[in-house]
Length: 207
Image 1 (cartoon, rainbow, N blue to C red):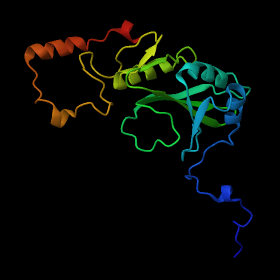
Image 2 (cartoon, rainbow, N blue to C red; image 1 turned 90 degrees about the vertical axis):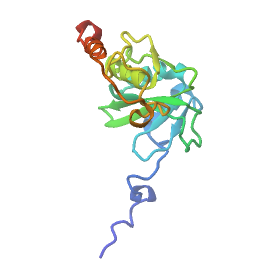
Image 3 (cartoon, rainbow, N blue to C red; image 1 turned 90 degrees about the horizontal axis):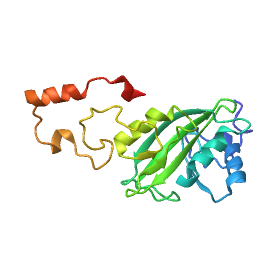
Image 4 (cartoon, rainbow, N blue to C red; image 1 turned 45 degrees about the horizontal axis):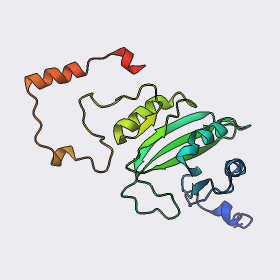
């Protein structure tokens, strides 16, 4: 039997899930040429997608640069937050209590890239990404609601998933478990009426 693997390089033969640093990805070179080699941190991953940690002050500039490349990243596919406070594997990564990621796609390249921004717990603010990608609107609303991260300049930063009467940010690691750490739930007639009134649909609030 002929061994068809003999002509493959070690990189070619590596499993698809192997950790890669993505430093050979063309977009990393383009970013370094524009912003300098020390402007950001490239995180090794097993997803096949480069993950680039950028400074908050450069987020919009980097996003705009990617959107205007000759083969641009034209789609914001996803945006959300992460509570990083209990993360144990941080070698080489920026210090972060929380982070927000921006998953962008280039149709021309058939490639993805993920930008991440590190945030400290006492300064959970980012500039809104809606100026570059209007569909960031609802993503940012959900991220604010779930984690308490404020997107400065957002045109309509209000709840989008939970009832208006909800308290706290339920995807934070320190949010109490409702089944074991809350008092038994009670719903009086008066409270039920208030909750139903709060759920009244107001189209102007969803603009």
